[in-house]
Length: 458
Image (tube, rainbow, N blue to C red; front, side):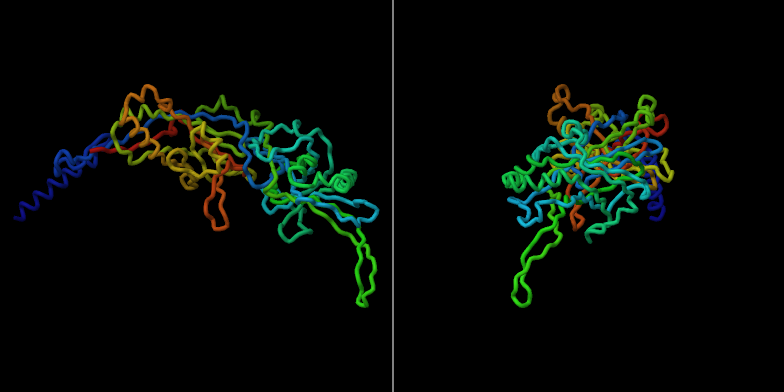
């Protein structure tokens, strides 16, 4: 009996060794199960194509107004300006007791907590009045033409550093840029409110009367500020009547102010420019590398032949399908940009509607991958996408001749996740934090970008 058990153990060990050393296509359970229960498994690597594409613009969806400029030693300069409207309460009017009908001063406040870069970089900001109103319903992209909306009527300017921009006017924010506004503009604004109250009757009338501001920097480099709130302040003296402790009325002069705020009911649109990108990066010389650069700099297009996969793996279940993108030449200089923390892989034609609809990944047509710092890579699990096409063509193989999606064109986009106060993910936006990374392309001679698939069937 002992000899019988010993011989059986040797047979099982040899059988297991035989199958554990098999690569490619192999079957599990052939010697101990009926043929109809045998599981066939295949491991395959599929070539894909990749190409860096310049980004003309991104859909404007960020919740902060971004101002500043920053030059990276590898990727060059990113400059950001913004347009903004201001909110007016329905039927707003200034006090009718303003002394001499005179506005004494006006300021635009730009409040912020977050910033990027060198806090000692010196900037000068300028404010211009818009000639054309932003459409409250329109989707705007970040390549909006400044000249279409602004003819160059400057209303104020102010030099600042992040370090010196302490918020002395509210308790809500750490930092503030306080820009003096042209007094003639402020006085006219007050007089129009007095003489044409219909301009201030409702928000629509107000945004047609006062189109908004364009804010830019005239000089400065090395930082961005992320402006979360804005206020336009009008300061004046006014006279009011009060009563003393004996019940005697008297008049008093005091200084007061009225405010027009930024709110979600109005529009704010950023612009991004990379004026010297072509001097830093030559895409014609980078077949072995692809680039990702945000905000609105460079994305990577990936092409996957679903037809090639199906012809090799029809009727299979996809256990594993991953696209691995390996970062290389990570910059570690003091002022170099970090790699994106998260990427989105999505059909190129679906990208704009994805962001317009405030979407999250669905793991069927859109996929995210976080940066693995230890392995310096991003890994996308696209198993549901591959499985969808196999099942579709299994049902009707004639679709292989007519289906326009036999080769998928996907875009790789740096993104950030917007969350609520409970840290619940709400939607994804194109990343507006400066970030960049080089990844090995599908043509890299040693470690190319590729699609690895493990499939099985009975």
